[in-house]
Image (cartoon, rainbow, N blue to C red; front, side, top):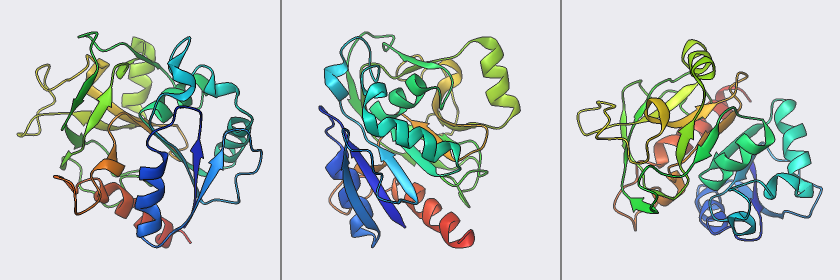
Length: 231
């Protein structure tokens, strides 16, 4: 795949994403937020971090970076876009994904390993991952509390657009396993066309041999499998 990783002022996971994809043999490029050329990617990554210092609210200023206009156009044409943590926040600000990310219920920054349950295999990002699979993928955020109104939640549920939920070791999505108060334990969703993913956990931090969990590889392998089957 050709992968473009967007860097905003304050991004701090862009090099992690670049390293993971390039180490897996993909043609990976870093794209500065003031650029207007996505470099003809198959996949765009909006990485984690604190774009523009999270001023106003997370992702609000990054929404107006010149490259984001190109990301929106790319997504609307069916291009694959993956927003991780701050990238998820940016995607909600652009309207590519519904809902909003609010302050964690604890009002504190959370950095920990977190279990997720795969809710749907019907997406490029979960392709061939059995529903119910539990993944250990780290989280690191203060505004990861996903909110959407009841009508919007019904839409996500009806259209099978919730891809990941926070869960416990028994794959139960309980209140106790919800680290930030997200509605319906939501950790990741996709758009109606299923080509845009937003997730708060960091799979790029669980994809190398030097870290405790390698479960993030399952998501990257899913993308690769999907890409090969649809090439």
